[in-house]
Image 1 (cartoon, rainbow, N blue to C red):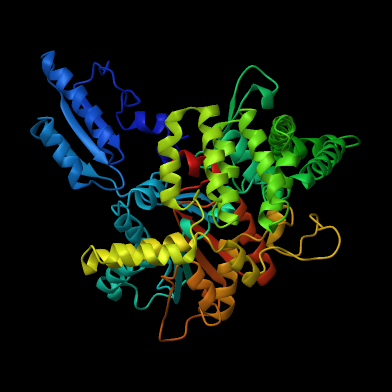
Image 2 (cartoon, one colour):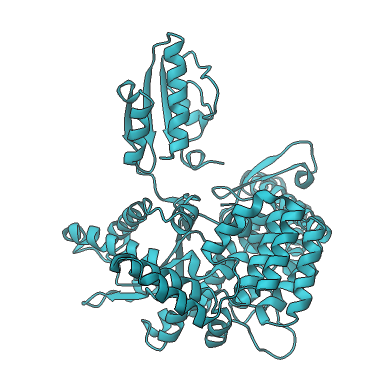
Length: 563
Protein backbone atom coordinates (compact mmCIF):
# COMPACT_ATOMS: atom_id res chain seq x y z
CA UNK A 1 0.00 0.00 0.00
CA UNK A 2 1.26 3.49 -0.88
CA UNK A 3 0.65 6.68 1.16
CA UNK A 4 -1.81 7.81 -1.54
CA UNK A 5 -3.92 4.66 -1.01
CA UNK A 6 -4.38 5.61 2.64
CA UNK A 7 -6.10 8.90 1.79
CA UNK A 8 -7.57 8.46 -1.72
CA UNK A 9 -8.22 5.05 -3.25
CA UNK A 10 -8.84 4.39 -6.95
CA UNK A 11 -12.63 4.93 -6.77
CA UNK A 12 -12.19 8.37 -5.12
CA UNK A 13 -9.64 9.39 -7.76
CA UNK A 14 -11.98 8.28 -10.57
CA UNK A 15 -14.73 10.44 -9.08
CA UNK A 16 -12.33 13.36 -9.62
CA UNK A 17 -11.81 12.59 -13.33
CA UNK A 18 -8.68 10.45 -13.03
CA UNK A 19 -9.04 8.07 -15.97
CA UNK A 20 -6.36 5.52 -15.13
CA UNK A 21 -3.41 5.04 -12.76
CA UNK A 22 0.02 3.93 -13.95
CA UNK A 23 3.20 3.16 -12.10
CA UNK A 24 6.06 5.33 -13.33
CA UNK A 25 8.35 2.99 -15.28
CA UNK A 26 10.95 3.12 -18.02
CA UNK A 27 8.52 2.49 -20.87
CA UNK A 28 6.20 4.61 -23.06
CA UNK A 29 2.92 5.87 -21.59
CA UNK A 30 0.08 3.82 -23.06
CA UNK A 31 -2.63 6.23 -21.99
CA UNK A 32 -4.87 7.71 -24.68
CA UNK A 33 -5.59 10.73 -22.47
CA UNK A 34 -4.46 14.17 -23.64
CA UNK A 35 -3.38 15.09 -20.10
CA UNK A 36 -0.81 13.32 -17.89
CA UNK A 37 -0.27 14.14 -14.24
CA UNK A 38 2.79 12.77 -12.42
CA UNK A 39 2.77 12.47 -8.62
CA UNK A 40 6.41 12.18 -7.54
CA UNK A 41 8.84 12.24 -4.69
CA UNK A 42 11.51 14.84 -5.60
CA UNK A 43 14.01 12.19 -6.72
CA UNK A 44 16.23 12.87 -9.74
CA UNK A 45 15.73 9.34 -11.13
CA UNK A 46 11.94 9.83 -11.14
CA UNK A 47 12.20 13.23 -12.86
CA UNK A 48 14.44 11.68 -15.56
CA UNK A 49 11.82 8.95 -16.16
CA UNK A 50 9.18 11.66 -16.66
CA UNK A 51 11.52 13.45 -19.09
CA UNK A 52 11.99 10.23 -21.10
CA UNK A 53 8.20 9.75 -21.40
CA UNK A 54 7.65 13.34 -22.52
CA UNK A 55 10.51 13.23 -25.01
CA UNK A 56 9.15 9.93 -26.40
CA UNK A 57 5.77 11.64 -26.92
CA UNK A 58 7.45 14.57 -28.66
CA UNK A 59 9.41 12.22 -30.94
CA UNK A 60 6.15 10.45 -31.87
CA UNK A 61 4.45 13.79 -32.60
CA UNK A 62 2.01 13.34 -29.71
CA UNK A 63 0.80 16.58 -28.07
CA UNK A 64 -0.39 16.43 -24.46
CA UNK A 65 -0.50 18.58 -21.35
CA UNK A 66 1.89 17.51 -18.58
CA UNK A 67 1.83 18.37 -14.89
CA UNK A 68 4.22 17.23 -12.17
CA UNK A 69 3.14 17.32 -8.52
CA UNK A 70 6.11 17.02 -6.16
CA UNK A 71 5.45 15.67 -2.67
CA UNK A 72 6.25 16.80 -0.03
CA UNK A 73 8.18 19.55 -1.84
CA UNK A 74 10.13 20.38 -5.00
CA UNK A 75 13.91 20.70 -4.92
CA UNK A 76 15.90 23.03 -7.16
CA UNK A 77 17.84 20.04 -8.57
CA UNK A 78 14.56 18.73 -10.05
CA UNK A 79 14.21 21.96 -12.06
CA UNK A 80 17.78 21.58 -13.29
CA UNK A 81 17.01 18.07 -14.59
CA UNK A 82 13.92 19.37 -16.41
CA UNK A 83 16.11 22.02 -18.05
CA UNK A 84 18.86 19.53 -18.96
CA UNK A 85 16.32 17.21 -20.57
CA UNK A 86 14.82 20.08 -22.57
CA UNK A 87 11.27 19.81 -21.20
CA UNK A 88 11.18 22.68 -18.70
CA UNK A 89 8.74 24.65 -20.89
CA UNK A 90 6.56 21.60 -21.59
CA UNK A 91 5.47 20.94 -18.02
CA UNK A 92 3.73 22.78 -15.23
CA UNK A 93 4.45 21.78 -11.66
CA UNK A 94 3.04 22.10 -8.18
CA UNK A 95 3.89 21.04 -4.63
CA UNK A 96 1.78 18.88 -2.32
CA UNK A 97 3.12 19.31 1.21
CA UNK A 98 1.86 15.92 2.36
CA UNK A 99 4.36 15.17 5.12
CA UNK A 100 2.38 13.53 7.94
CA UNK A 101 0.60 10.19 7.50
CA UNK A 102 -1.18 8.90 10.65
CA UNK A 103 -0.66 5.13 10.73
CA UNK A 104 -2.53 4.76 14.03
CA UNK A 105 -3.69 6.71 17.08
CA UNK A 106 -0.11 7.12 18.29
CA UNK A 107 2.09 6.68 15.18
CA UNK A 108 2.66 9.33 12.52
CA UNK A 109 5.02 8.59 9.65
CA UNK A 110 6.55 11.02 7.19
CA UNK A 111 7.08 8.10 4.78
CA UNK A 112 10.62 9.19 3.93
CA UNK A 113 12.53 5.86 3.86
CA UNK A 114 15.34 7.60 1.92
CA UNK A 115 16.00 9.98 4.85
CA UNK A 116 18.45 7.57 6.53
CA UNK A 117 20.68 7.05 3.50
CA UNK A 118 20.45 10.65 2.29
CA UNK A 119 21.43 12.24 5.60
CA UNK A 120 23.52 9.70 7.54
CA UNK A 121 25.42 8.14 4.61
CA UNK A 122 25.53 10.82 1.91
CA UNK A 123 25.38 13.90 4.15
CA UNK A 124 22.46 15.33 2.14
CA UNK A 125 20.54 17.78 4.33
CA UNK A 126 17.64 18.47 1.96
CA UNK A 127 15.03 16.71 4.17
CA UNK A 128 15.89 18.76 7.28
CA UNK A 129 13.54 21.55 6.19
CA UNK A 130 10.75 19.03 5.45
CA UNK A 131 10.98 17.60 8.99
CA UNK A 132 11.14 21.10 10.52
CA UNK A 133 7.98 22.07 8.59
CA UNK A 134 6.22 18.91 9.81
CA UNK A 135 7.17 19.76 13.41
CA UNK A 136 5.91 23.29 12.95
CA UNK A 137 2.60 21.92 11.61
CA UNK A 138 2.29 19.73 14.73
CA UNK A 139 3.22 22.73 16.89
CA UNK A 140 0.56 24.91 15.25
CA UNK A 141 -2.12 22.21 15.72
CA UNK A 142 -1.25 20.82 19.16
CA UNK A 143 1.24 23.28 20.66
CA UNK A 144 2.87 25.45 21.61
CA UNK A 145 5.20 22.72 22.94
CA UNK A 146 6.37 23.28 26.50
CA UNK A 147 9.76 21.59 26.58
CA UNK A 148 11.96 20.17 23.86
CA UNK A 149 14.79 17.70 24.38
CA UNK A 150 17.02 16.00 21.87
CA UNK A 151 20.31 14.37 21.01
CA UNK A 152 22.18 14.03 17.74
CA UNK A 153 23.52 16.40 15.12
CA UNK A 154 20.52 16.02 12.82
CA UNK A 155 18.10 16.47 15.75
CA UNK A 156 19.85 19.72 16.70
CA UNK A 157 19.69 21.05 13.13
CA UNK A 158 15.98 20.20 12.85
CA UNK A 159 15.29 21.80 16.23
CA UNK A 160 17.07 25.06 15.36
CA UNK A 161 15.30 25.37 12.00
CA UNK A 162 11.95 24.53 13.57
CA UNK A 163 12.46 27.15 16.32
CA UNK A 164 13.06 29.78 13.62
CA UNK A 165 9.81 28.80 11.91
CA UNK A 166 7.93 28.75 15.23
CA UNK A 167 9.11 32.26 16.14
CA UNK A 168 7.86 33.59 12.80
CA UNK A 169 4.33 32.30 13.49
CA UNK A 170 4.32 32.70 17.30
CA UNK A 171 1.39 35.11 17.23
CA UNK A 172 -0.92 32.47 15.72
CA UNK A 173 -0.98 30.15 18.75
CA UNK A 174 -0.46 32.49 21.69
CA UNK A 175 -3.89 31.82 23.25
CA UNK A 176 -4.17 28.12 22.42
CA UNK A 177 -4.00 25.50 25.19
CA UNK A 178 -1.26 23.01 24.29
CA UNK A 179 -2.20 19.35 23.89
CA UNK A 180 1.41 18.09 23.68
CA UNK A 181 3.78 19.06 26.48
CA UNK A 182 7.16 17.57 25.63
CA UNK A 183 9.03 16.84 22.41
CA UNK A 184 12.05 14.53 22.22
CA UNK A 185 14.13 14.37 19.02
CA UNK A 186 16.65 11.58 18.51
CA UNK A 187 18.92 10.57 15.61
CA UNK A 188 18.92 6.97 14.42
CA UNK A 189 22.70 6.82 14.64
CA UNK A 190 22.54 7.47 18.39
CA UNK A 191 21.16 3.94 18.74
CA UNK A 192 21.92 1.44 15.99
CA UNK A 193 21.86 -1.57 18.36
CA UNK A 194 18.08 -1.50 18.89
CA UNK A 195 17.44 -1.35 15.14
CA UNK A 196 19.78 -4.31 14.52
CA UNK A 197 18.32 -6.67 17.15
CA UNK A 198 15.79 -9.34 16.12
CA UNK A 199 12.27 -8.19 16.91
CA UNK A 200 10.19 -10.52 19.11
CA UNK A 201 7.02 -8.50 19.73
CA UNK A 202 4.20 -9.58 17.39
CA UNK A 203 3.96 -6.36 15.36
CA UNK A 204 7.75 -6.32 14.88
CA UNK A 205 7.79 -9.96 13.74
CA UNK A 206 4.97 -9.31 11.26
CA UNK A 207 7.02 -6.40 9.87
CA UNK A 208 10.21 -8.50 9.66
CA UNK A 209 8.39 -11.41 8.01
CA UNK A 210 5.76 -9.80 5.74
CA UNK A 211 6.90 -6.13 5.52
CA UNK A 212 4.28 -3.68 6.78
CA UNK A 213 3.88 -0.78 4.32
CA UNK A 214 2.00 2.36 5.33
CA UNK A 215 0.31 0.46 8.16
CA UNK A 216 -0.90 -2.30 5.83
CA UNK A 217 0.34 -5.85 5.21
CA UNK A 218 -0.22 -8.35 2.40
CA UNK A 219 -0.91 -11.81 3.83
CA UNK A 220 -0.17 -14.43 1.17
CA UNK A 221 -1.78 -17.84 0.51
CA UNK A 222 0.31 -19.46 3.27
CA UNK A 223 -1.53 -17.25 5.80
CA UNK A 224 -5.00 -17.03 4.22
CA UNK A 225 -5.20 -20.80 3.50
CA UNK A 226 -6.56 -19.96 0.06
CA UNK A 227 -5.14 -19.25 -3.39
CA UNK A 228 -5.20 -15.47 -2.97
CA UNK A 229 -3.53 -12.76 -0.93
CA UNK A 230 -5.38 -10.40 1.41
CA UNK A 231 -4.42 -6.82 2.26
CA UNK A 232 -5.02 -6.07 5.95
CA UNK A 233 -4.85 -2.68 7.66
CA UNK A 234 -3.02 -3.11 10.98
CA UNK A 235 -4.15 -0.57 13.55
CA UNK A 236 -6.09 -0.24 16.80
CA UNK A 237 -9.41 -0.65 14.95
CA UNK A 238 -8.50 -4.31 14.42
CA UNK A 239 -9.74 -5.69 17.77
CA UNK A 240 -7.64 -8.85 17.55
CA UNK A 241 -4.44 -7.11 16.49
CA UNK A 242 -4.76 -4.34 19.10
CA UNK A 243 -4.65 -6.97 21.88
CA UNK A 244 -1.56 -8.80 20.64
CA UNK A 245 0.51 -6.19 18.76
CA UNK A 246 2.75 -5.26 21.72
CA UNK A 247 2.95 -8.77 23.20
CA UNK A 248 6.06 -10.94 23.21
CA UNK A 249 5.57 -13.64 20.57
CA UNK A 250 5.64 -16.43 23.19
CA UNK A 251 2.35 -15.06 24.64
CA UNK A 252 0.53 -14.53 21.36
CA UNK A 253 -0.77 -18.08 20.72
CA UNK A 254 -2.24 -18.22 24.25
CA UNK A 255 -4.01 -14.89 23.78
CA UNK A 256 -5.37 -15.93 20.37
CA UNK A 257 -6.65 -19.23 21.85
CA UNK A 258 -8.45 -17.31 24.62
CA UNK A 259 -9.88 -14.93 22.01
CA UNK A 260 -11.16 -17.91 19.98
CA UNK A 261 -12.88 -19.36 23.06
CA UNK A 262 -14.50 -16.01 23.89
CA UNK A 263 -15.71 -15.67 20.30
CA UNK A 264 -17.17 -19.18 20.36
CA UNK A 265 -18.97 -18.38 23.63
CA UNK A 266 -20.54 -15.32 21.99
CA UNK A 267 -21.70 -17.44 19.03
CA UNK A 268 -23.14 -20.05 21.42
CA UNK A 269 -25.39 -17.41 22.98
CA UNK A 270 -27.69 -17.87 19.94
CA UNK A 271 -28.97 -21.12 21.40
CA UNK A 272 -32.09 -20.59 23.41
CA UNK A 273 -32.80 -17.11 22.00
CA UNK A 274 -36.37 -16.19 21.09
CA UNK A 275 -37.16 -14.55 17.73
CA UNK A 276 -36.80 -10.96 18.99
CA UNK A 277 -33.44 -11.66 20.63
CA UNK A 278 -32.23 -13.48 17.51
CA UNK A 279 -33.25 -10.52 15.36
CA UNK A 280 -31.27 -8.12 17.58
CA UNK A 281 -28.29 -10.49 17.57
CA UNK A 282 -28.24 -10.71 13.75
CA UNK A 283 -28.70 -6.96 13.20
CA UNK A 284 -26.33 -5.70 15.92
CA UNK A 285 -23.67 -8.31 16.72
CA UNK A 286 -23.34 -10.96 14.01
CA UNK A 287 -21.51 -8.77 11.47
CA UNK A 288 -18.94 -7.69 14.06
CA UNK A 289 -18.40 -11.28 15.24
CA UNK A 290 -17.85 -12.49 11.66
CA UNK A 291 -15.30 -9.71 11.05
CA UNK A 292 -13.52 -10.59 14.30
CA UNK A 293 -13.53 -14.29 13.34
CA UNK A 294 -11.97 -13.47 9.96
CA UNK A 295 -9.23 -11.37 11.55
CA UNK A 296 -8.58 -14.04 14.20
CA UNK A 297 -8.09 -16.65 11.46
CA UNK A 298 -5.65 -14.36 9.64
CA UNK A 299 -3.54 -13.64 12.74
CA UNK A 300 -3.43 -17.33 13.67
CA UNK A 301 -2.30 -18.05 10.09
CA UNK A 302 0.33 -15.29 10.35
CA UNK A 303 1.65 -16.76 13.63
CA UNK A 304 1.93 -20.23 12.08
CA UNK A 305 3.76 -18.80 9.05
CA UNK A 306 6.18 -16.86 11.30
CA UNK A 307 6.82 -19.99 13.38
CA UNK A 308 7.64 -22.06 10.27
CA UNK A 309 10.05 -19.45 8.91
CA UNK A 310 11.77 -18.85 12.24
CA UNK A 311 12.14 -22.60 12.89
CA UNK A 312 13.85 -22.99 9.51
CA UNK A 313 16.21 -20.13 10.39
CA UNK A 314 17.08 -21.63 13.80
CA UNK A 315 15.73 -18.49 15.45
CA UNK A 316 16.41 -19.57 19.06
CA UNK A 317 20.10 -20.08 18.34
CA UNK A 318 20.20 -16.68 16.66
CA UNK A 319 18.59 -14.97 19.68
CA UNK A 320 21.04 -16.74 21.99
CA UNK A 321 23.96 -15.33 19.95
CA UNK A 322 22.46 -11.82 19.96
CA UNK A 323 21.96 -11.90 23.74
CA UNK A 324 25.56 -13.09 24.20
CA UNK A 325 26.79 -10.14 22.09
CA UNK A 326 24.66 -7.66 24.06
CA UNK A 327 25.97 -9.00 27.37
CA UNK A 328 29.56 -9.39 26.16
CA UNK A 329 29.84 -13.14 26.82
CA UNK A 330 31.16 -16.00 24.63
CA UNK A 331 32.36 -13.64 21.91
CA UNK A 332 34.56 -16.25 20.21
CA UNK A 333 31.61 -18.64 20.13
CA UNK A 334 29.47 -15.87 18.60
CA UNK A 335 32.09 -15.24 15.89
CA UNK A 336 32.05 -18.98 15.08
CA UNK A 337 28.25 -18.82 14.75
CA UNK A 338 28.52 -15.83 12.38
CA UNK A 339 31.15 -17.63 10.27
CA UNK A 340 28.85 -20.66 10.02
CA UNK A 341 25.97 -18.32 9.10
CA UNK A 342 28.06 -16.86 6.25
CA UNK A 343 29.32 -20.27 5.07
CA UNK A 344 25.73 -21.62 4.92
CA UNK A 345 24.86 -18.57 2.78
CA UNK A 346 21.90 -17.52 4.85
CA UNK A 347 20.60 -14.25 3.36
CA UNK A 348 23.29 -11.54 2.88
CA UNK A 349 21.32 -9.01 4.93
CA UNK A 350 20.90 -11.40 7.87
CA UNK A 351 24.62 -12.22 7.98
CA UNK A 352 25.47 -8.52 7.70
CA UNK A 353 23.09 -7.68 10.54
CA UNK A 354 24.85 -9.97 13.04
CA UNK A 355 28.26 -8.76 11.83
CA UNK A 356 27.22 -5.15 12.52
CA UNK A 357 25.80 -6.08 15.94
CA UNK A 358 29.10 -7.80 16.80
CA UNK A 359 31.08 -4.75 15.67
CA UNK A 360 29.03 -2.17 17.61
CA UNK A 361 28.84 -4.15 20.85
CA UNK A 362 32.55 -5.04 20.74
CA UNK A 363 33.82 -1.54 19.91
CA UNK A 364 34.78 -2.67 16.41
CA UNK A 365 36.38 -5.90 15.26
CA UNK A 366 40.04 -6.71 15.72
CA UNK A 367 41.95 -6.23 12.41
CA UNK A 368 42.41 -10.01 12.13
CA UNK A 369 38.69 -10.81 12.64
CA UNK A 370 37.62 -7.91 10.40
CA UNK A 371 39.74 -9.11 7.46
CA UNK A 372 38.76 -12.75 7.97
CA UNK A 373 34.99 -12.11 8.20
CA UNK A 374 35.05 -9.60 5.34
CA UNK A 375 36.88 -12.11 3.10
CA UNK A 376 34.47 -14.93 3.99
CA UNK A 377 31.46 -12.67 3.39
CA UNK A 378 32.61 -11.61 -0.07
CA UNK A 379 33.51 -15.18 -1.02
CA UNK A 380 29.99 -16.28 -0.04
CA UNK A 381 27.96 -13.37 -1.40
CA UNK A 382 30.13 -11.77 -4.08
CA UNK A 383 32.78 -9.04 -4.45
CA UNK A 384 30.11 -6.39 -5.21
CA UNK A 385 29.70 -6.09 -1.43
CA UNK A 386 33.06 -4.31 -1.18
CA UNK A 387 31.19 -0.98 -1.45
CA UNK A 388 28.73 -2.21 1.21
CA UNK A 389 31.62 -2.68 3.67
CA UNK A 390 32.92 0.79 2.82
CA UNK A 391 29.49 2.35 3.52
CA UNK A 392 29.04 0.42 6.77
CA UNK A 393 32.47 1.52 7.94
CA UNK A 394 31.62 5.15 7.17
CA UNK A 395 28.40 4.87 9.20
CA UNK A 396 30.25 3.23 12.10
CA UNK A 397 28.16 0.06 11.79
CA UNK A 398 31.04 -2.28 10.89
CA UNK A 399 34.50 -1.05 11.83
CA UNK A 400 38.01 -2.17 12.69
CA UNK A 401 39.25 -1.43 16.19
CA UNK A 402 41.45 1.67 16.35
CA UNK A 403 43.24 2.57 19.58
CA UNK A 404 42.45 5.95 21.15
CA UNK A 405 46.05 7.09 20.72
CA UNK A 406 46.02 6.24 17.02
CA UNK A 407 42.72 8.09 16.57
CA UNK A 408 44.03 11.23 18.32
CA UNK A 409 47.32 11.17 16.37
CA UNK A 410 45.43 10.76 13.11
CA UNK A 411 43.07 13.62 14.01
CA UNK A 412 45.98 15.94 14.89
CA UNK A 413 47.88 15.09 11.70
CA UNK A 414 44.87 15.63 9.43
CA UNK A 415 43.82 18.85 11.21
CA UNK A 416 47.15 20.49 10.34
CA UNK A 417 46.51 19.97 6.63
CA UNK A 418 43.07 21.61 6.41
CA UNK A 419 41.32 24.90 7.20
CA UNK A 420 39.78 25.65 10.61
CA UNK A 421 36.24 25.05 9.35
CA UNK A 422 37.14 21.71 7.79
CA UNK A 423 39.08 20.78 10.95
CA UNK A 424 35.93 21.31 13.00
CA UNK A 425 33.98 18.97 10.71
CA UNK A 426 36.77 16.38 10.92
CA UNK A 427 36.74 16.64 14.71
CA UNK A 428 32.99 15.88 14.65
CA UNK A 429 33.65 12.89 12.37
CA UNK A 430 36.36 11.52 14.69
CA UNK A 431 34.15 11.95 17.76
CA UNK A 432 31.37 10.21 15.83
CA UNK A 433 33.74 7.31 15.10
CA UNK A 434 34.69 7.13 18.78
CA UNK A 435 31.03 7.25 19.81
CA UNK A 436 30.26 4.03 17.97
CA UNK A 437 32.79 2.34 20.26
CA UNK A 438 31.07 3.07 23.57
CA UNK A 439 28.23 0.56 23.79
CA UNK A 440 29.58 -1.29 26.85
CA UNK A 441 30.12 1.93 28.85
CA UNK A 442 26.71 3.35 27.89
CA UNK A 443 25.01 0.02 28.65
CA UNK A 444 26.56 -0.06 32.13
CA UNK A 445 25.71 3.56 32.97
CA UNK A 446 22.07 3.27 31.85
CA UNK A 447 21.52 -0.33 33.01
CA UNK A 448 20.46 -1.55 29.57
CA UNK A 449 21.09 -5.21 30.45
CA UNK A 450 18.68 -6.31 33.24
CA UNK A 451 20.46 -8.12 36.09
CA UNK A 452 17.48 -9.85 37.66
CA UNK A 453 17.72 -13.21 39.38
CA UNK A 454 15.87 -16.11 37.83
CA UNK A 455 13.88 -16.19 34.62
CA UNK A 456 12.41 -12.98 33.13
CA UNK A 457 8.59 -13.01 33.24
CA UNK A 458 7.48 -12.13 29.70
CA UNK A 459 3.76 -12.36 30.59
CA UNK A 460 4.00 -9.72 33.32
CA UNK A 461 7.07 -7.66 32.30
CA UNK A 462 8.70 -5.29 34.75
CA UNK A 463 10.46 -3.05 32.26
CA UNK A 464 10.93 -2.26 28.56
CA UNK A 465 13.44 -5.13 28.17
CA UNK A 466 10.52 -7.49 27.47
CA UNK A 467 10.56 -6.32 23.83
CA UNK A 468 13.89 -8.17 23.50
CA UNK A 469 13.00 -11.19 25.68
CA UNK A 470 14.31 -9.49 28.83
CA UNK A 471 17.87 -9.30 27.48
CA UNK A 472 18.13 -5.59 26.61
CA UNK A 473 16.30 -2.29 27.20
CA UNK A 474 16.19 -0.24 23.95
CA UNK A 475 18.81 2.51 24.31
CA UNK A 476 16.69 5.15 22.52
CA UNK A 477 13.72 4.55 24.87
CA UNK A 478 15.90 4.43 28.00
CA UNK A 479 17.43 7.82 27.11
CA UNK A 480 13.93 9.29 26.73
CA UNK A 481 12.84 7.82 30.05
CA UNK A 482 15.88 9.22 31.91
CA UNK A 483 15.79 12.69 30.33
CA UNK A 484 12.04 13.11 30.87
CA UNK A 485 12.41 11.93 34.47
CA UNK A 486 15.19 14.48 35.16
CA UNK A 487 13.58 17.18 32.98
CA UNK A 488 16.92 17.61 31.24
CA UNK A 489 20.43 16.19 30.82
CA UNK A 490 21.58 16.94 34.39
CA UNK A 491 23.37 13.83 35.65
CA UNK A 492 23.54 12.36 32.13
CA UNK A 493 26.43 14.49 30.87
CA UNK A 494 28.77 11.49 30.62
CA UNK A 495 26.18 9.43 28.72
CA UNK A 496 25.60 12.34 26.32
CA UNK A 497 29.37 12.64 25.78
CA UNK A 498 29.67 8.91 25.06
CA UNK A 499 26.82 9.24 22.55
CA UNK A 500 28.67 12.00 20.67
CA UNK A 501 27.08 15.05 22.25
CA UNK A 502 24.79 17.51 20.41
CA UNK A 503 22.27 17.18 23.25
CA UNK A 504 19.93 20.11 23.97
CA UNK A 505 16.95 21.18 26.05
CA UNK A 506 14.64 24.19 25.78
CA UNK A 507 11.85 25.05 28.20
CA UNK A 508 8.95 27.49 28.04
CA UNK A 509 9.03 30.34 30.54
CA UNK A 510 5.40 30.18 31.60
CA UNK A 511 3.78 27.06 33.20
CA UNK A 512 1.53 24.90 31.03
CA UNK A 513 -1.57 22.79 31.67
CA UNK A 514 -0.95 19.55 33.62
CA UNK A 515 -2.81 17.49 30.98
CA UNK A 516 -0.39 18.43 28.20
CA UNK A 517 2.59 17.45 30.40
CA UNK A 518 1.45 13.82 30.14
CA UNK A 519 1.73 13.78 26.33
CA UNK A 520 5.17 13.35 24.70
CA UNK A 521 5.96 13.60 21.02
CA UNK A 522 8.91 11.24 20.30
CA UNK A 523 10.57 12.18 17.00
CA UNK A 524 12.85 9.58 15.37
CA UNK A 525 15.09 10.93 12.60
CA UNK A 526 16.20 8.05 10.38
CA UNK A 527 13.47 5.57 11.28
CA UNK A 528 11.79 3.87 14.24
CA UNK A 529 11.20 0.15 14.84
CA UNK A 530 8.01 -1.47 16.11
CA UNK A 531 10.03 -2.76 19.10
CA UNK A 532 10.70 0.86 20.12
CA UNK A 533 7.01 1.69 19.62
CA UNK A 534 6.01 -1.22 21.90
CA UNK A 535 8.61 -0.19 24.52
CA UNK A 536 7.34 3.42 24.59
CA UNK A 537 3.73 2.22 24.88
CA UNK A 538 4.79 0.09 27.87
CA UNK A 539 6.64 3.04 29.44
CA UNK A 540 3.58 5.23 28.89
CA UNK A 541 1.31 2.75 30.68
CA UNK A 542 3.75 2.42 33.59
CA UNK A 543 4.26 6.18 34.07
CA UNK A 544 0.79 7.45 33.19
CA UNK A 545 2.11 9.11 30.03
CA UNK A 546 1.04 9.04 26.41
CA UNK A 547 3.71 8.79 23.73
CA UNK A 548 2.98 9.87 20.17
CA UNK A 549 5.65 8.67 17.76
CA UNK A 550 6.61 10.81 14.77
CA UNK A 551 9.14 9.08 12.53
CA UNK A 552 10.68 9.73 9.14
CA UNK A 553 9.71 6.10 8.35
CA UNK A 554 9.10 2.76 10.03
CA UNK A 555 12.31 0.74 9.84
CA UNK A 556 13.82 -2.59 10.86
CA UNK A 557 17.26 -4.19 10.52
CA UNK A 558 16.66 -5.29 6.92
CA UNK A 559 15.41 -1.88 5.74
CA UNK A 560 18.25 -0.12 7.55
CA UNK A 561 20.94 -2.25 5.89
CA UNK A 562 19.26 -2.31 2.47
CA UNK A 563 19.18 1.49 2.44
